[in-house]
Length: 102
Image (tube, rainbow, N blue to C red; front, side, top):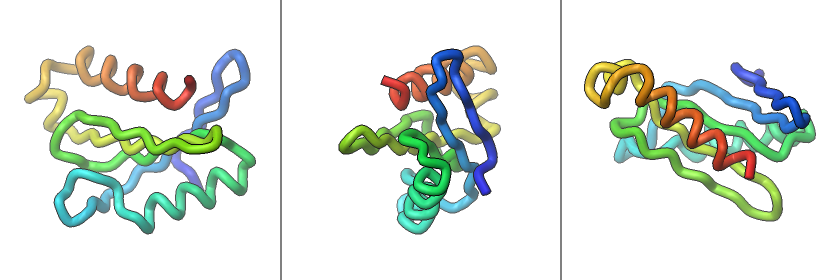
């Protein structure tokens, strides 16, 4: 099951899944989580999705091909205190989600 389903006014659907696993360098989502998200996208006939995971820095990564997009969205509680507060983190998330919808 996915954790968050976003639907825009224009009908764009983005599935998000929260995971607590990271790759060996703690900078990317794990391959099994990416494959699982691709399965969710296939199940919902959706083209866009993302994995939210506890990465060390706010640096989203977009994986896209043939009209499909998977977003790796690192975020953790410490980003709110260490990286400029809630508005900075919220803007980071908004900008990352825009990259999935273009």
